[in-house]
Image 1 (cartoon, rainbow, N blue to C red):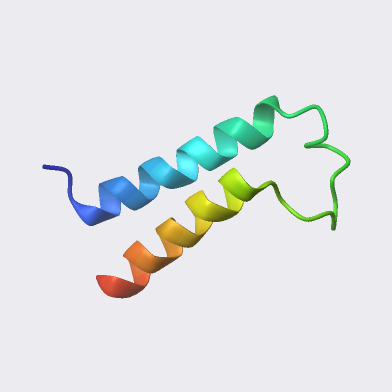
Image 2 (image 1 turned 90 degrees about the horizontal axis):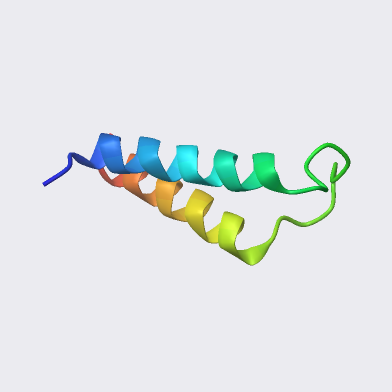
Length: 52
């Protein structure tokens, strides 16, 4: 079983990977992030808060 820090790092990597493939990634600026990215980043935050 992965440690929570590894899971959080994996979620960060996944979110960054998805954003990197998005054609809007260079120009999105202050536009709302897509729902999937918001969910990944929120899960990462929750994991970090729960185990720090």
